[in-house]
Picture 1 (cartoon, rainbow, N blue to C red):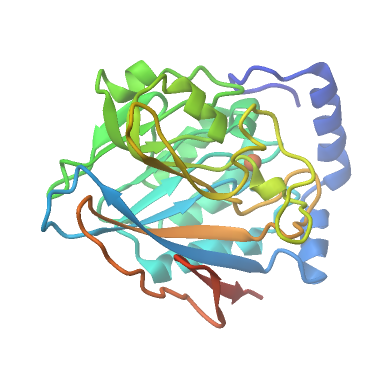
Picture 2: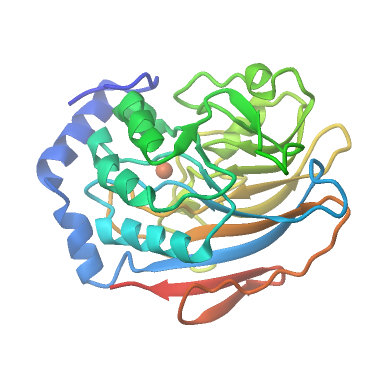
Amino acid sequence: MGLEGRGSNYSRLKELVENTMITVYGEGWPAKAARALGFQREVIVREHVAPIRGLPAGSDSIRMAFISDLHAGPTTCPKLLLQVVDMLKKLQPDLLLIGGDLVFLEARHVDFFAEALTEVRPRLGSFAVPGNHDLWADDRHIEKAMAKAGVRMLVNAGCQLPSPFAGVSLCGLDDWYTGTPDAERAFDGREHVDIVLMHQPSNLLDLHGRSFDLALCGHVHGGQIALPGGWPLIVPAGPLSRKYNRGFYTVGENGHSSTLFVSTGIGCVGVPFRLFAPAEILFCTLVPARTRLQPKIVAAETTTTAVNRDQIAATVAGN
Ligand SMILES: [Fe+2]
């Protein structure tokens, strides 16, 4: 294998390392072993409420799910990804957003996940952006597979949600590190977009003062291996990967306060486990900008644990 997608920054050393992993990891024994040992079983549902300017006062709220960094491949157990699909089916979001890195090493790994995801059909649609691993694998294969699952890739592109939420604007950026992000095209000349979908926090640098209400990304995995309390030992490439490594941040320029959410993601890269960086689904209620709603528990199953004051988590143990 080698670089099959359009991603940049794919060095000869990376190619050598990835080819070695493809040979050694085969069809995924590391992930299966990790799951058998008790890793890769926990997925947290975090709940949040986000005010959105494009929703007029008095309009209904939108229930949005956001997942990122699935990393289908030999270091992520297929059962974990099917568990995520089952959780999405139970959550029944109106809108599904995916922050990229659907695969690790080879694009073909996305196929079974895409097939399972066909059973999740949010009424307002499903949208995704590519991550660096997708652009290195084969982004065209991934885009086709996701299209079959009803997921539209937003690569430097924007859209309005379907009626009756046509006032809500959404755009997706190409990856900061390996793609060619173009906020001018993604924003389509607008200075403000309600929701920005991007792969990594460093994509904030592409916005050049444009404003948004909510930006969603992944990439950092919370370090994937972190110290107790969540301090990541290593973060992936990107000048903002350390500063914004997980959770919610208030950011903004030109006097507009915006929310950035950095997901810890779902799957694993390199090694088949996480430490103090649990897999998570964000379940976010989008409300009119002047509304105040209290989050409800949307636990899919089993134990409910408070994560902090305004986020509620549900831990789901899979088989
Ligand atoms: Fe990732």
